[in-house]
Image (cartoon, rainbow, N blue to C red; front, top):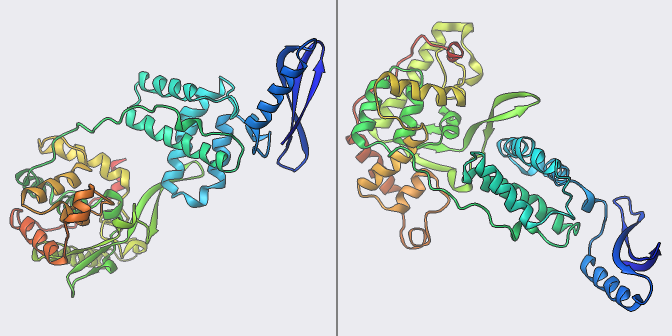
Length: 398
C-alpha cells in the first residue's frame, strides 16, 4: 500500500494506490477537507494514518461493491460447500430481505457499519420477522463479510461488532404425552402419512430422515436400522423439488443406528410385505424407482416433505386432537424418553443431536443395550397398530 498527497482546487487529497482484481493499479482519492495553505504537515499525518488504516487491503474494487452483490458472489463461490437446502435458504434471505433493504441505501462494503446492520435487524423485527429468523440473516451477512475479511477486501468484519436480536425460545405446543401419542397412532394408522407419524413419534426421526429411510438400511436379521440418507427440498431452476441425499444427514451425529424391538420390527416387517404385495398387484403402474424407500404412497411414489407438513394438521383437526407441529413428534419422543427415566446422553444419541450440554456430553455415557431397553419401554406404552395399503396417491391432495 502506497499513497501520495495531491491538491485539487484549494484542498488536500490523499491518493491511495490499490490493485484491482486484474492486478492493475487503481487509485482512491480521499478528500482530507484541509486547505492547502498552512496544512502540509497535518495533511501528511492524515495520509500516514490512512495508509495504516487501509494497509493489507489488496483490492479497491470489492470495497466499492454493494453488500448484496458481495453476498451473491460469496454464495456462488461457496455453493459447492453448502447443502442444497442451505444454499436455497441463503438465496431466499438475500433476495427477499437483504438486497431490497440495503440496495436502496447504496451501502458498499467500505461504507457498511455495525449500526447499519443493527438498524436492519430492528427493521425486520419491527415488520414482523421472528428474531430467530433475523439471527439467521445475521449469520449469512457475518459469514459473507468474514470471507471478505479473510481475503483482505475489508479491514474488519463489522458484523462482529453488531448486536444481533436475542434468540426467542420456541413457546409452541407442549409435546404430546405417551397417552396422546398412543391415541394419535391408533387413530391415524390407516391414513396416508401413518408411516411418517409412526417413525417420528417412535424413533424421533426428523422429516428429512424418515423420508430418506431405505429398506436396505433396515436389517431384520440383526435388528438394527441405520439413519444415513435424507430427502430435502431444493430449487432446481425455478422449481422446488425433492432431492434424495445419500450418506448425508444434518450433522455427523445424525448418522446413527437404532434398534428394532419387537414392536417396531413387527410394524416395519408387515409394512414391507404389504408394499411388495401392492407393487405386484399394480404391475407396471407402480413406481419402482423408490422400491427401496419406506415412506411411499400407494403407487410407489416417494412422499414429499410438504405433503406431510400439510396433511398432519388436517389429521389433527379431523380426529379432534391437540394441535402440534409434525416436528413436535420428535420433541414428544424425547420428552417421553426422559419421563421413562433415560439419561440425556441416551436421548441425545437416540435423536442424533450434536450436543446437549457439557455435563451431559462429558459425564453421562450411553450404550447400545440402553437403546434396546428404550425401544422396548416405549413400545410397552403404545397400541398395536398395523400398516395398511390404502387407495391414495399424494398428488390428489394438491
